[in-house]
Length: 441
Image (cartoon, rainbow, N blue to C red):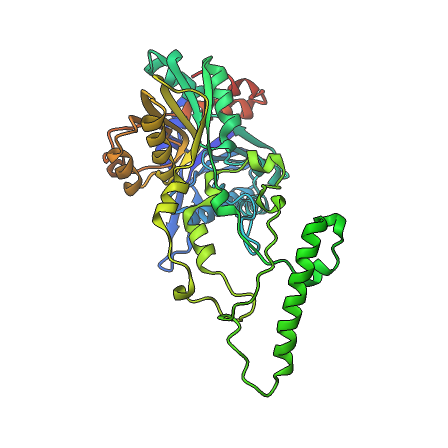
């Protein structure tokens, strides 16, 4: 390319080589070294003065090292008088952390965006962001490409009876994604709804101070009388405790204090905005997070956490019943299900949905499609051993070793280098890239 140089980081050199091949050029030389204390140093092997510099660096299994390496490469290019620095990130790091999931958490995807901009990046080219709002974290142009045309092309070429297939979203947050693919293929779609009410609903005693401020109109006449009596009972108990200053206080945690339980319909409803519900993903309700939340509860009357012995034993039959509360909205009877999501790292939810479709919905077979396959040996082993999944199709946006690939015969990787190469070419020549969103490869 005239007045353009393409460099590759160390995260995914095979993909970078493919991209350069589609552009009929070679990767420019760059040296990335590590000192004994693991500090990274970068040196370009050619002049980048007044050049458009394209740096290809995807997320990987050593994400943090490759992020720092990318930041240093960007800064080195800017300090070497590059005209523009365009970062090509097929998989955007920390994309699953695009919102606060805990009160004292961080929006790490925004932090990554800030670091890229501070280091000197002028343009970002990425693929299938996990959340569309990530592009709004930047004050520089962001081209979010879609793998939908490539996946649709694979379906056209490899599934002869694709017209008898149904595109399925494994959660409500993926509805927009599957409808777009279904429209392109000209077939029907369906979605899975999982009732997580057993996780979201919990009882909490309302504040007595707040209840004093409630009127009969707020909670109803009958409820108002019940609440008033409960408040009086609590006031009498705590009044007696205050009078016994010289006596040892009773074990408050073990005493049978009346609970201010108000069984209102509002406490059982999901009162979040509809757009938040529809954008919800399965990673927002991970089992590990739920388990951690349940085990870290503290008593409102004590300053130390509740011991594990004080917790009610887990009823596994209830857990299985709750997990099996899956509803399919649509029809996959005697049809092939194309289960679509933007990324797959842990296969548990995919396997659960595939089992439900095959056992309970009379599905003919299940193919999993993902834009980013963040596969580990454990993930592919579980998929290979699952009898309900026939194939897993993912792009090569995320680097996977040959040893890991060899674990599963069900894995099929689709090459996205032609799409990324065409985006680079159009960006370099100042052409529109909008046609890439719909063109089949």
